[in-house]
Image (cartoon, rainbow, N blue to C red; front, side):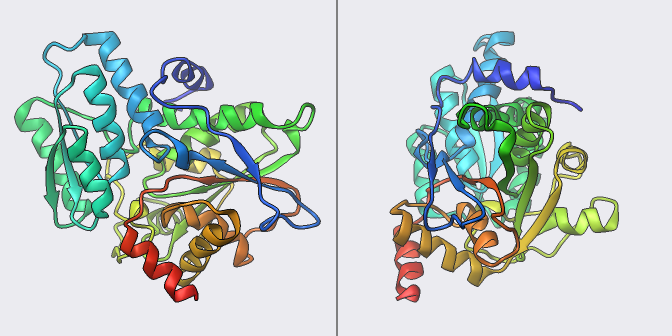
Amino acid sequence: MPIALADIVAAAGRIWGAIETPVRLSTWLSAPAGVVQLKLETIQPTSSYKIRGAWNACARLHERHGVDGVRLVTASAGNHGQALACAARHFQFPLTVFVSGEAPRTKLDAIRDWGADLQQCLDYDEAERQAKAFATSQGATYISPYSHADVIAGAGTIGLELYEQQPRGRAQNLRAVVVPVGGGGLISGIGIALKALSPSTKIIGVEVAASCPFTRSLEAGRLVTIDVKASLADGLTGNLDPDTITLDIVREVVDEIVVVEEDEVRRALAGVVAHEHLLIEGAAATGPAALLAGKIRADGDIAIILSGANIDADRLVDVLGRRI
């Protein structure tokens, strides 16, 4: 394991640019046999969980090098770029973000607003290739949105919080945690934390049918390249870095990965807005979608990670309009 519980505990003490987010009970999603908790990463300063890993990575670089000679570059579907731009501005690191042209405008505008140099690419896979080439040619430090030990440790602080937020004496009753899966950094961090603190808690990932590289790679027993389609859950789409550390971590700490369809994500997003009165993006709707579609069961206490809220207004209106 490249990351241990101690690394996640250290990250929790380092990332004051993020906040401890609450859990909220969902009467809409809960069933007689189980209580569903929603972990509200949507209220982070950059409206997604990504600030945790981005801040931890920048803080670690600052501890080792100060600000002299540090130049950052990353690839992003939007949320990581925004979070890293926020953290980089605080630590005074210049940052270039190569981002998928498919990213919502709200994410692109936020990256610019935080002062990063934004380079738009055809899709996420191309953004990742160009960012890594830029790091090599310019001597910049590449901060992967998912395959980076400090980024994963930062994401893992969600697992620490979930464990500590359970009612006294009931932490071991948390049957499962349901996590959106894109590059695997979020579920890797949460899985490492909770398997150390509560081994009986199942870690369940949710991918979208439009982009499910973990499902296909785990079936094949090796990393495979997939044909990525467009998805409402734009933050989860793209192939995995050939050098990713997350595939091996996921094999170790994740119990199950399920796949949801686009119409299931759409209905779940509209349902969360209507029943929970919460704004979420497509990636955050995948956990509720898996539960509503019967792909996971609430037969005990479970927690669902609502990972972010960065969705364009016109896309949200379209989703809600189709529901009506």
